[in-house]
Amino acid sequence: MSDLSLDASDGFSEMRLPGVKGKKVVITAGAGGIGFAIAKLLNSQGAVIAICDVDADALHKASRELNNCIAIVADVSNESDVEHFFKQVGEKFEHLDALINNAGIAGPTGNLENLSLESWQKCLDVCLTGQFLCARKAIPMMKACGGGAMVNMSSAAGKHGYAYRTPYSAAKFGVIGLTQSLAKELGPDNIRVNSVLPGIVEGPRMEGVIKARADATGTDYDAMKDAYLRNISLRRMVSTEDVAATVAFLISDAGSNLSGQSLSVDGNIETL
Image (cartoon, rainbow, N blue to C red; front, side, top):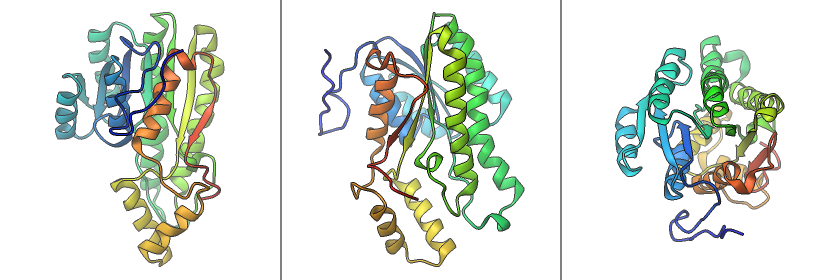
C-alpha cells in the first residue's frame, strides 16, 4: 500500500499516490488558488500537466513553476477559447487521463430581486456551463486511452442553500447533477466522475466573499467571519492543499472504484 502521508512543512511533497506518475491531466483555472495547489501537487507526483486561466501573467509564472507545462489563456465560459485550449492539449498529449474542472467565480452577492440577469448568467456560464464545455472536449480524449477520471469542483454551497449567493449556489448544485449524470453515462467507458465540495477556503477570495456578505447584511467583517467559523464543526477554514489532496486521491489508482460521489472538504459545515 502506498504511503499517503503528508509533509506538514509544505503540504505536498511527501504524499505518494499510486498511478499518478505519467498521467496527462488538464486543470482549468490552474494558475492560482485551488487550481494551482492541485497542479503543484500533481506535478510533484510526476503527472504531466496542462493548465488554462484568464490571467496571462499568472499563467506564465505558474508554468515556470510546473516544469514549463502547457499553459493557455482561456475563459471556460467561451466555447472558442475551450476549443482552442483542448486543440493545443490534444496536439501535445494525444490522449487525456484526467480533467479537473476547477474554474469558477464567486458571482454576485445580494438579494435576488436586486441581481441583474447579466450577473446571474455570468456566474452560471463560468461555474456550470464551463464544466460542460470542457467535459465535452475531454471525454473523447479519455475514451481514446481506455478510460480516465474527471473531478468537477462544486462547493459546500452545492450542498446547502446559500442566502445572498443564490447564483453561485444554484450553479454548484448543478455541478453535482452534472457529476452524477456523467458518472452513469461514462462508467461503461471506464471514466470515473466525482465532485469535490470545498468549504470555507482560506485566502483572498474567501476574504472578499465574507466582506461582500458583511456589506450586504450590514454586518461587521470580523463578526461575519466569526459567524462563518461557528457554522463549521471543526471551527476552522480549510486550505487549498486540503482540497488538492482530495482531488489527487480521486484521480489516482487509490480512488479507482470511486465514481458518482460528492466529497466535502469543509471541516463539516453545518449550514451556510
